[in-house]
Image 1 (cartoon, one colour):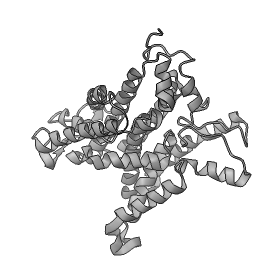
Image 2 (tube, helix red, strand yellow):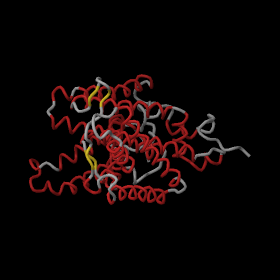
Image 3 (spheres, rainbow, N blue to C red):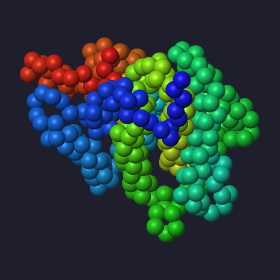
Image 4 (cartoon, helix red, strand yellow):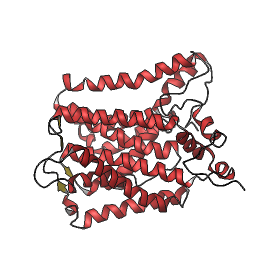
Length: 370
């Protein structure tokens, strides 16, 4: 009998499903080359430039935008990091969680509760502690919830998230339902003080860039191919003697740690946290983001976060909708339903659909497509 293998050994034959799912160069990372239209090398370079161009545009925002727009972009950037964390779990590994906000909330509360009562805390220490606390809870939740599958997994993750929510909501640990304030924002020696609006903006943007880059590299690794193989056909992976549980647990913990990073940034941005950061509605919102952008694509998580927040702002605008703005959830919901119905690949698939319509050629199926 072939022995079960853990993350330490990933033979090429075993990750064949993952390699096939990622189509030799995972679109989830930087785009998949197509056999039609342009040479694969040129196309890969072109697609790889898109995130860099987007990063450059976002980096220019503080130089021309007002405080409101800058704060809005920071909010989107933090939610994009949060969406990337769930994308690793749901889009890459096929584990749909409805309790992901728990890790964001724990990261946020850790940033406040573990901060010095007087004086500024060390940025690297507080950031590491926030991510470790979120990852530790993810390890606990994942170790138990990954024993289940399908709708049972979804419900168990939701139950653990609600448990964490009520711990902070109904006890004095985190100030109860009123929340708790961060007295002084952390600093990195004399180099970086997050009290400064521009310094925090570029720190958040840098965090997004690093997160995206690390996840892109991870998905191109054998570990990433194994996760994709689990998503495509976990039964077959197990039939070959491959132990899928350690891989899923590792993905769950990494995902929780990245969500903790987003929670840390939320705590520093607002200087305040409350139990709503752990609420199921936020878990549902981030799931909508990655579906709207395109499940199975890292850049889809980014696009989905931007689209979701901008749609919120649009439908909440009294200047545009007048009194109807108070019913903004209705407009947002209808728009998302229509988008999902017309764009099954998500917003990230719009360019592919246009190429197919204009060229009359059916391009290679992308990872994450139904």
